[in-house]
Length: 241
Image (cartoon, rainbow, N blue to C red; front, side, top):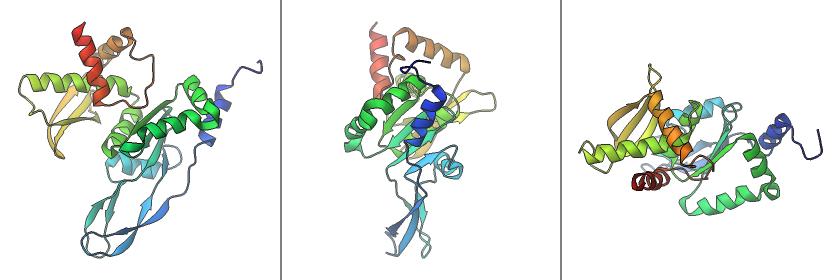
């Protein structure tokens, strides 16, 4: 092995060691109902290997929940954090909406670009989002061994088709929800936080969508932000041609 060759195992270890995996911190949170100042457990970094309990809460949708011990008021309090799926080589950072570009620059600048280079070489996917629900969705997508780019494309197609035939009002948001007992993919639709409908996508449909994106060159790059807008642009391009 030459000095310029890399050892995948060593490279992956270097990536993982460069990610801070702290113990959970305690943050003071004031109850909006009674004013009591309690302690909320805060995870600034989560890993399927090192913090499985916190990851389970993320996927269940309860990671950012806090219950006031005095009056029982339930509070949702999201905060920036990093999710690392070691098994499927994926990282998702939740940050503030106005800090997405800054977060991308920070990733590119770690170790003068070495972190990003090694990540690309090993097939690591790095995503950024400012939405807690999207962080949860990405965690489920990667847990199930799927490509979030393909899933966003499929969701965009479903939303467009359902809106055209009147099945959706146009205000719904689609989220990947997991696999059913037939191993089909579940997409759930929500309107103002309320579940309105579900769709099931077969593995064959997923594979066909992946082939379409691959043929169009859309899977050659790993953008930091893969969301509904990203997929809608691709859907528009493919519709034109």
